[in-house]
Image (cartoon, rainbow, N blue to C red; front, side, top):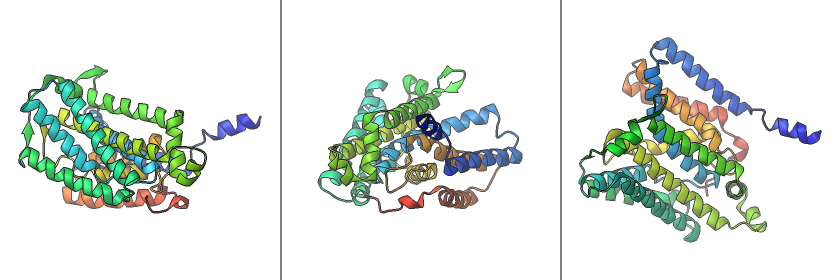
Length: 323
């Protein structure tokens, strides 16, 4: 009997989850009232395209935040991976699948560097990834010559704009597939649970025999690989790599993860909650555009909403410095 009761309790949504759902519904009502085209099929497809990259990148960042660390290089990595993919497709005429594998490989290498700096060299993740961010930014500008790198590739067009299921753009399907796999791995597998354990208490995790260095290293590598995957989806949509392509991605991703309910101190929240944060950020930006709000005023409104949303959903019992 007690087992049945405890199992049923696990399905009761928390107050923060209810607030997130209520926030999404409220924004849908407000923006629909402001412009009847907001919930049109065309705009819904546009919303899916706009939110796909953020969902993939925020999913990866969630893994690093769950272990109590932070990765400030994700925006610069998106830019670097996007430009590298574009250069390989345009200048070297690589097949799309090979350029994609190269981009994912870049992500793994960058993640390995971030992880080694944090785990082995023992530099705080805030400082180590900040340095990597600056290096990647410089390399991106050097590689592109400060110019946009445009290309044309049918496979990349299909990845982003193809319609495999009911008219839904493939870029959204790829993003949801990545998110679904990440949710299953983090919530339903042993490896995923070790990430939560490491973030909750690294010392306790070591005492029970977990290799916390390997776990933290793996989180950084998975995060960077997903950022590179997001970059591939971005260039597939636009057919161009630009030196500022990942600008704004870092703050949006952090906001999405925190609004979703994952504590910056690690150990609580989860990938499954990040989609709510992504929905709020993407809906806010899309809705403000649709109802015609001044672009400068949009920044003010977005910042204010993020602060309010974090204030409402942040678990203050988990407040601590990131490691």
